[in-house]
Image 1 (tube, rainbow, N blue to C red):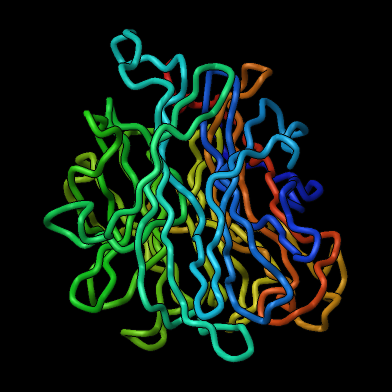
Image 2 (spheres, helix red, strand yellow):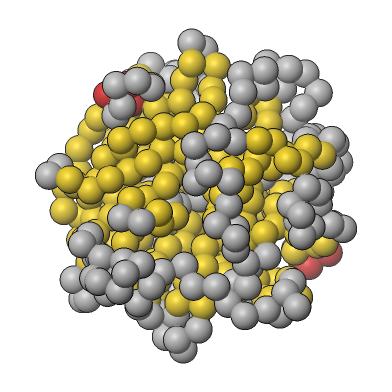
Amino acid sequence: MTGITGITKGRVALTIPPDTPPDEVWRYGLGFPFQVAPRKAGLFCNIRKDGTKSIDLEIGSDVVLFDELEDIRAGNAMALSRYEIEKTFIVRKGPVLGGFVPLGAKSADGDPHPHAGTGFGLAMGARHVLDETGNYDYRDDADRHAELFQFGYDGKDFKILQREYVKVESLLSEWELAGNFVTNAIPDGRDLLYVMLAKVVKLGVSGVSRWRHGADGWRPVSFVPVTGDEVRWGEPSLIRDGNGDLLFSARSDCSVLPGVAFDAAVWRSTDNGETWEQVIYRKDCRSRSPVSINQAADGTPFVAANLPPHDRTREVLCYWPLNESRTDFEECRIARDAPAEFGPAPSGSWWRIDHPNSAIVRLADGAWHSLLAYRIVDNGEVEGDADPPPQTGCYVEEVLSSGEAIPTWNF
């Protein structure tokens, strides 16, 4: 028998970046786990600047390596990117996500993986004009670009091998790749499959890009759209099911078709991403917040999102395991209830538990663990100038399951 038996509810893993200036308030937020070596994992974690009354003032990302959950500490952080600010403008730096082939990984035939110990990261930068108060409108950017990293790990140090600024339209000649989110890449032979958003006229279409290692490091070589343009679907996520099928989800938005912002959907590909079919559509099941498809260590897929009410609040994180035929959700389960645990948000606003995403990694004990990362933050910090409470930061929990674990990588 397989199935999810629960999700841990631990303390905050990362709170204050070690290089925070003494006159500023920085806090860790979204986290994205990945495998680095046979018994070591990493976490990309973004940083938000508080006290500015500017929504989503993301100012950079760090990477933290660890071999057990208790070892996730800010003291182990390595800086990847930081924001730029002048008198009249600010350049926000979005979260770094990407893909990595862990050191020591082997191909399916047992030979050493030719690109083991290398990977890539991608972050979106946005330049905003500051108003007379020193704030900006996060919906209005003067310029956008992608920050592309090439990474390496030699068993001791995680290194940035190359960093470059690229125009989003230059990553692939056939598509204008406009963004990423919500999960890191998954392996496919010697390639990596990575969810991205492509721009079609003024609409966003979510899909899967294939990244391949060459003379210039990791680069995208193709993009297959999954969602249609009748609804704006963003913030995509991807897993590989136990039978080899690919399962994909994305966040619906009401900017194109009203009334879909609270829906959830899952697509499936039975031909390794060449074609896709929507197999689940559930109306009015979540709040207006991020949604992602994830996986327990035994292969059980589940979709994570926030419970209604049907507005922007995100105080209760829930999840739905998929049924065996992958055609519907099972009964909703609660992963974390912030008001029940912490009481009302100190600012008088509401709690955000959001951007859940998972990866199955092997840690120091030699076992495979499904790690679910998300942030908890008082909304008064994000939309106002409230002080951060002790609960603010990045959380990394374990999804517990009853079946035998399915390895992500061959070591």
